[in-house]
Image 1 (cartoon, rainbow, N blue to C red):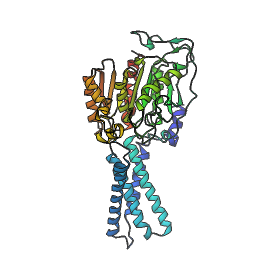
Image 2: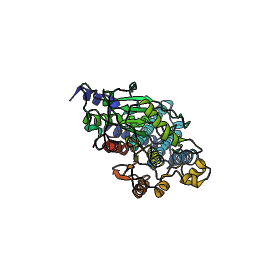
Image 3: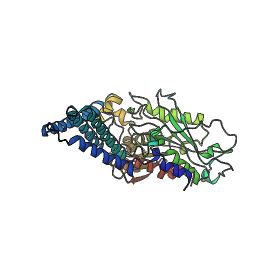
Image 4: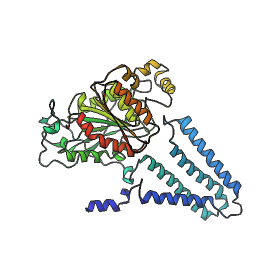
Length: 438
């Protein structure tokens, strides 16, 4: 066992948060704290107070659901049921404290408040387990980044017809073991879109001379979400470094971009009244790649992918800009771009013009056009009740449109358990489709 492994094992920020003793301990402590808040021998703690706490907790839960899903409406699919259930548990604990606090001496009020914090921590832990968003505390930290490798190599190696790049490339001595991850901002020069900073991964071979002309994969996060989700929760760098280690330092360049402009924003990846998102992803992003990176060129060397909303966007760009992206990876995407309901989407994005929506909607486009030169992979959680039916329809539509399309299910729901595996398992497929390996 290496020293590094021992350090990771004993470093608390690397302890698993979604399985093992940490979440189980938090769960047990939370239920115990809730029981202590609910049970009392105080003569004034009677059934009416308990019933009052239950009613208040239920009322607060209904209020939260109304505010989030009906008024604010940040999630087109609504709040997942398991999130609402754990929210209700936390709000019930808050209600118990409100009814218990007046009966307690000051010192025990602090203890009761500590019990509430344990219940809230338990609820947050269980929501995290449901989404598998933060497998460790380290995943909550800002990722370590490197300075972007700039400049163009004079000598290059590129693939040839019928010969993938890996068959023509020979790694030089002294090649680094790992790639670099850099923070970048891809401006909306033509679109006017205002994105958050993203990330670019350059594999070890990118620093070689001669330099291989590598393909590029554009990745997008979900909503709510941010580009760093792919780095932290998605273990992007680890997956790409592992791939590069098996292929003489070769791996696709991966550019993670922000397609929303904010955690809860949803410009739909269309050019509409909301924003010119399609122009950003279909023009500004490829232009930035060609200006700033030395890569393989052409639609065959440029793929696009994403998860949830990002998966929907990948599909949209593949069918609306097929001359730009020849391959796409749709992980747990939606059946159609949406702001909640079809009518809300058409009204807000196109002023009620149904024909304008149909002109860019992937299902409508695939029904009237063939895409024989587009490669697609549709992936969804086997236990995802929200997105699996839609992904099955997208797969059927892509087949009917003549795409070279595959369909996969991965055990799990709408969570990083699925998203992480979907990218890692399909990385070789992306490399094949973009001419990197056979």
